[in-house]
Length: 526
Image 1 (cartoon, rainbow, N blue to C red):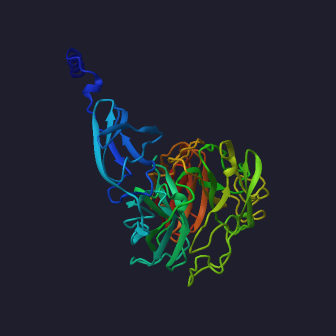
Image 2: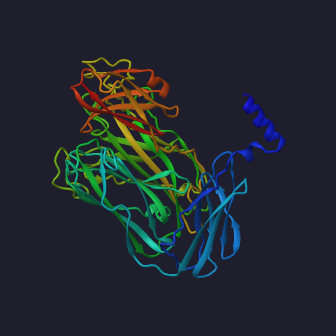
Image 3: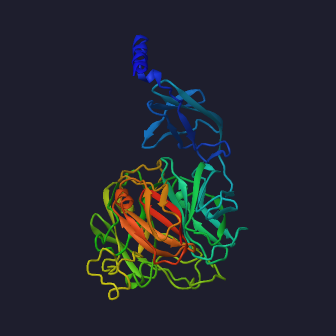
């Protein structure tokens, strides 16, 4: 205590503030602008320069300044990023210095020498190249990488994605089972935007194609990408992803992407039959064309799901605009023949499913919103209105052995929903240039502790995550879900005791999932 007292007296005598005494690191700054590609535009138009800049506490960011050929401009501030709409003064090389300045006076600069040209050629760009996803391998279920893409305004008519899926040289080769998967691109504000929704084939490799022109604004410059495959240890997958940029003049020079929904939702839960939250948006008057791009795939089925939902349930869903039923989605996909020509599969690949097929990209549905340009709208996504999962644990009238085999089994239907608004215009648009409810990014990876482990089947779990409703599932090594629990908070989960002593001994996986992220832990039952 005496030492602390004398230190405080010394600081006061020297007139040193707490801020001066605490070391402050300079800002961290990055940009999507890259020297790997020219900036292509047939006429000189505005091009958005995106910047991310952060600083450690107790310091704060003051501003981002962009010096272009000796002239300084202050970048606009948005939620999670900065941007400046740069209209080049001429074709040729321009010197661009991006400076992030903190309130402490510390600053960080990065320099780019960017060549602006008046022509573009069709080209193929490789991102993922022979990336292997293998549970407990180098990329265990998740893969992250950074890639560079062309930079342009009104130079390409469309972008086509080509996904090559091969059997890797790992134990087990190709995974034996059909796994839910997605490929995402990171937006300027740090949010992950789904680019491709995919279900792997049964034990074989295949090739796939998808038009991704809607994401033209995000597939430019230096971009982070990620892959998730819900694999559990029976082999893996090797992925290569190429993009064909086809030269031509698009209908509109600019576009942007607004995330509407991104999450998993219970289907037929009596406690919440319509769980998808209302999304409120203002479609700017500067927009010339707008549409919804909606992906949904239904999962889980069996004797404890009424009607084999959601995977094998032929559902009709609705999109309401301002409370009025406006669009209809028939969520059903024929799988024989396979829509991507993926043949030679094992398993039940040929049966139709709720929005997907094994060994195929799940193509999204689109709905025109152009008539709502310049207005504020509320969007609601209503699941099949008459469906109720009578075997759901939240059904008070469920009787085991009568209503279904086991009312507490918890293996109930779920939808994975992802939806974007795609805006297009000949006026400059930036990412997220539309007002709406806050999106929750589901990127957190939770640490999960199980004790005792190995266990005789009775154990407890310890984990931390933001307060939210969560789902805990128990899986076999081949990914089959054998038990599901629902919790309103991390506190409730941590206070619970689990008993799986009725299961056959062996290796299982505990998976925790909510709107913020996921966590996985292996458990051995003796």
